[in-house]
Length: 404
View 1 (cartoon, one colour):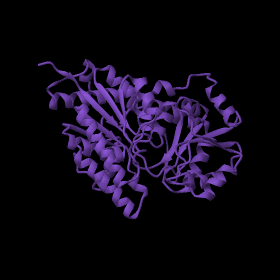
View 2: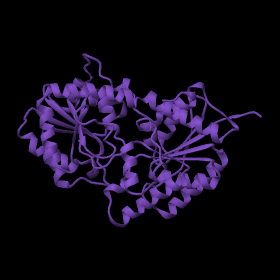
View 3: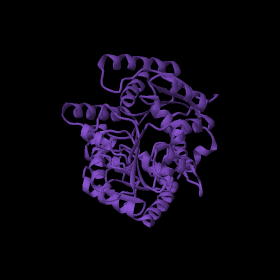
View 4: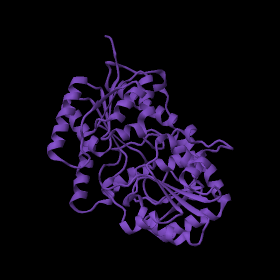
């Protein structure tokens, strides 16, 4: 009997998730012999992804917020797509794609229904809205027959919240969905990349620069950062703060806190930065700061560490594991401005500490979270599942037999 390639459908709610995290992994799987299909809300980014990776893409409108009528239409379209393509594996990422993708895969008779939890938006919600998010997450996990989570600390939290049972969910390696391209973020000796980024942002070349990367949102701790900055900036006139990210209107920062940052000449708000320019942002930094309230596995910490920069972040699930307190960075209590300000002052005042933490961070990320390692792990996992459950397919590539 002639065997067919393993046909995998990877789903996310918006194309930015696929392009931001999975471009190289999807290409990697395609080159290993898998037939790869990517599904998200339609857009130019999805079309570009298909061309860049040599895969087939499919645009299906999906609303990020609950919308019974629109969600029903999206579900019907996804079911029809799956029945036409007959994927062997459906792997969904992000909450809405997880819920719709797992329901559609079950109804379409897909044998391997995989769902990865990247984070829990419910953590910063209250009341009925939190209950809705809890039920949606619980439902997606129950419909999946392969359940994954991007970090051990997030898995522990899910167990604590009773979203899953012990043994229900799996962390591959040390975590992550696609790792980080360590070579891309490595900063060569003598490079002018960081200097050029400072000039572009209006940061003095001799300043000590702390960098925040992420959505300008309440749950990223921007309000706390604003208060901490007020405390520390008066004492350290050489310290500047660069903030790279766009405003998130769905979770706005208190207006007073945002205005204080925007009106400070030593705070440089540069908005959303093209992915190609992100290595330059880290190269410009002396250290990075992320006072976030919730994470799955913080990609910012992986990129910051790969660039050899110390990370100051909060001691929460999703940061633990990416940042080793006292060895690769510093961790402080979430929501507390004073400890954050004290840690910022410590890093700003001690170049030797920054260098020691940054060097250890580069090694830590390279050993545990390199893109190559994580992609090999996922390739091996898909191949294992295919060998166990899909005897009519051929296992793609000899690299699929490699395990860690």
